[in-house]
Length: 115
Length: 114
Image (cartoon, rainbow over all chains, first blue to last red; front, side, top):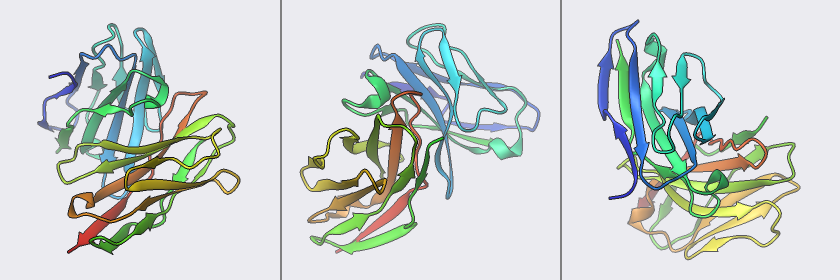
């Protein structure tokens, strides 16, 4: 089925380890974003992209890197994991600007725990 | 910078009744969009309704409608004839047309009682 696929669904990391959260969509969406969700803080924008080769920072970019070499993929890299990065991470995509036509399509999330 | 405030961490409503969730935001831009998203216990984010800031007419989607007050920067969501399936977290999200950023509020947890 078409949609946004996030892998892994769950991950436990040790402090200082690095890893990549994968996000792929097969809907030919230009716009993709990464959010983190923490209790009481809603969803906070980490990085976003308006097309292949174009990325920009969101509200909380520190400690994360992204790249967008293809339209389909938008991986999120944690360079040196810290306990403060324990969160649920959501990837989202849209065909239209800001998802104005049909909203963003969200992945099912990755629950990351850093110990 | 955009900011958004949802002042009601939790709300409750009886089935078949009406409830209104509030949202205020701050932006210096003239062109923007406003959205309400719903997140049920499944954690899946679902678009509820959207509003273009340049449109004065309030958006409606079946039992869901908004009260958009541009001058007051207020964007409340009204749910009529509440159903048990409406129980979820609701997030208000203004989107900047210029920066492509969609910023979410902290959410309101809605409980629906039979």
